Length: 315
Image 1 (spheres, rainbow, N blue to C red):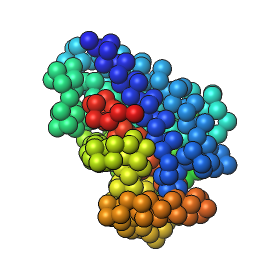
Image 2 (cartoon, rainbow, N blue to C red):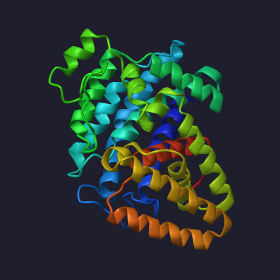
Image 3 (cartoon, rainbow, N blue to C red):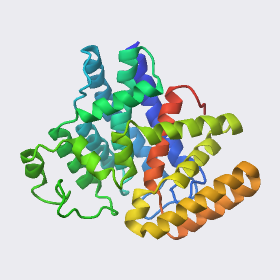
Image 4 (cartoon, rainbow, N blue to C red):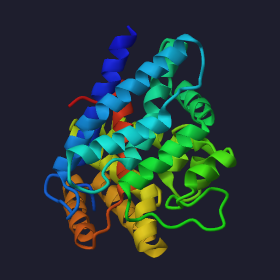
């Protein structure tokens, strides 16, 4: 029974990473027809394949915790690092999976532990289980997470000064984390004021579950997985500031992206063809301006995992 659940979660994860990256047109993102200098669709596909073995090890650890009726899941930080390292081994592109690796390393054990504990996965139980898991992350998880960020080396990351957590590029980061007993939960909680990936990891996967509902609705309405993913992404983009856009382009641009996405999603609901044509124009505009809302794409990928696992969408 539990081996079957692990297989379903791993398949859902790999499929979600590839489906999200390939969905076209997601404004500003890499997809079938748009690549950036340091990342293309092929990098996301290879990264998805390379990450599965990391998630498998985490799910086995989750099974052991679940059988002992514990909510502590060892190896969350190590899993994030494993995904980023494996990705780097297999492609020459830039950072394509730090965000998804972080969310998935909370989401996957949360789904699995919920099923082990309750016999089925309800969204309410999933949310509470997720909070319990992340609250029990450790100092070691935080150290590994910092190491993963250093390996991924995202261009948008700023420096941290006068903060309760050390700067990622501080050579004494590990000493400072350990001496101050800083857990991964503490790091994510601190970052959650700006970063939506960190926020969803500590708030019970609120935005992931929200995206799951959008995906289910759009798939039921249009019957097409590509369009359902694109519209889910657009809906989330219309509601939340993307951390990468904020960091690289500022609040004014981020607000413009949100407002534009909101107008387009409303038009699509009124006149699909007309709205979708405007969506393509928006995609081209953001691509030319190199505005890539990667954090919202990460949330979308996580929502796809949940929808696939729950059987709410089909390819």
